[in-house]
Length: 108
Image: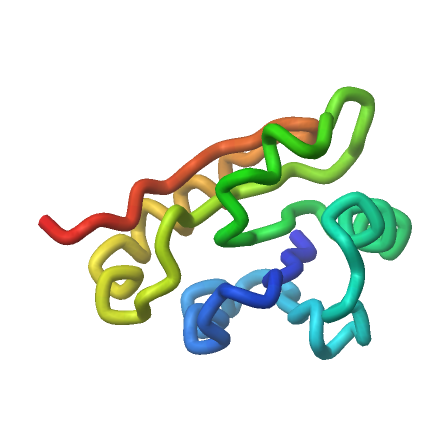
């Protein structure tokens, strides 16, 4: 599976996805693209999942008919994300084309 990390995703999370191909928007040169442009570029480049912290994305972009899935983390604090890595992996692994899912990253 090809996973694209959007700007707010801590790069250290990449270690959790060693069995997948992970790239960042920055590595792809897409750090200045708007949400719609980023989804389009990621899909055209063959990415399966966009991992982002942009909680407004579902209200701005429809995924109807798209091949890419979007997994949203509602926080980007690494200390909190570390406690939810298994949930993030599960969300990414079960992501279906044209769908949004949200992983709640809150202090327990």
